[in-house]
Image 1 (cartoon, rainbow, N blue to C red):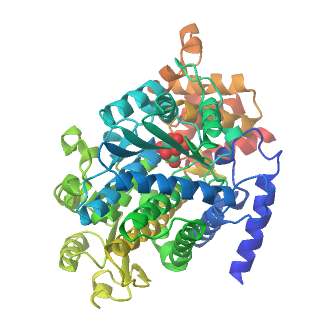
Image 2 (cartoon, rainbow, N blue to C red; image 1 turned 180 degrees about the vertical axis):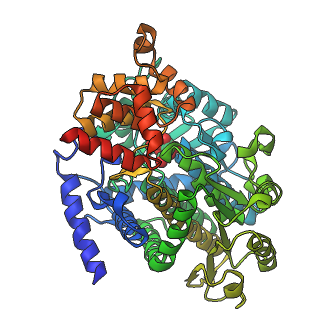
Image 3 (tube, rainbow, N blue to C red; image 1 turned 30 degrees about the horizontal axis):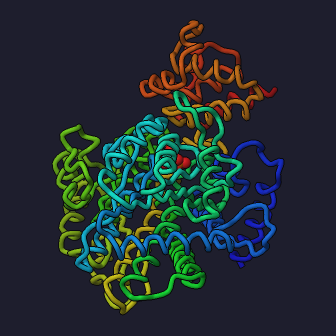
Length: 609
Ligand code: S6P
């Protein structure tokens, strides 16, 4: 029955956010999701239920051809997937002087990195040279830490792409911007459009084209909307492609690491897998093959969320750790270790978290990461990602307030897992396991003793196929792990009081998208004008009562740079606007109430009386 109730709630929610006046003119990816309106007041079980429903929207079908929004299963989306998969096939058949480049900013760039490595590994299994490469705004540092500023530079994007593709004759470029908003990707697409003899550009995002970002980009003559429209014109002749199904608003407004990241992984993996299977197994690339692939991912959603109780337990434990100023550590193996590192890195811009709050480590560190720039650990503690770093720097001070989450599969050497778990157990009893096994290969029974039954274990159906099936299973484990970790980090921050309604109240305004989002939030909560909101934001950001002329007229890029050094900017601006108090009074008020959400709510409620 809960399934039916969930479906009814989803249908009602979709009717609401799909209606033309709903939070207009925000694009779908920035709207707030009616399903998660009260997520800030929910307990762990309820948080899981809400996330499950929001994530199910990714796969929500539309079989009406006249529906307002295209969805993942829409005919036109499937057709583009078929067309792009055929381009992948062509490149794989003639790899000489060819390249497939995946690119994006933040989470989108991290997924680009992950998939580029995975698919090169699949090629290696077939004794083929690598064909994939990735670019990410901010370079490899951005794989592990939040580097939001380079997202604003179209020229940087173009330059990085040109360097990556030097000497190549055929390039399939896939630029990902979930919100159809990143100037870095816009610059790359524009570069491709100016060199169509070499490049076939593909844009992946989750808004309709008319909602692509249209505001001017500093120092650049185009906008992303204009680039998208140029690509749509070229799509008729299959010289460019725009893959932009709508997957519904995020559970935490604007947090595209969640559904945006998921849908990116599903779309990209589907089209790349089909291209590979066409070459290696001579299978056909057609609608049915695409639909089968997406349905497999939909099953992963069902399998993952069938573990509601276990997932809620981990969220509860992680939440208590954060509430008590403790930490959450992910210790992972292979690509699931990377999923942990990615999830942890996203908490900084999303929740204004400290990098030490949630951290990820993986077995093998950089040699296993296999990133372009190699070992970055000398750049500072944020870049130390090896489990050995965990043992030397974290383990000695680990305590009962900390939660350690082990993420592994049945393919790992279990003795390794057991040994590390033993070391952790001597310091904290808050050990959790997230693990994947399959019908043909199960964990030893002592796993229950090692993790004192705190195990979220998923048993997948075995596929007795070839090496590619093995890879496909790992891709599914990754997606499942992504859902689980996103739920843990989001849930734990909700329990810590970092979310107000379904907004990231304490986000860092470190690029122009986040800057605009913050002002929009101030408008929404206080009813102020854009200019009032911006002025309050700047006062909070520069920690001044009066703005100087220079501050008022400076470029947004200067403000977003300054935002790196400021704390609780948006909550401070909210309190200032709502109560008319000074910036220093607002800061003192927020210091008193350790829970940001409660302090802000108290102020908003009192302001209304
Ligand atoms: C979002 C995440 C951000 C985005 C980045 C790119 O939760 O924190 O880092 O991934 O801003 O966004 P987009 O819309 O261009 O993919």
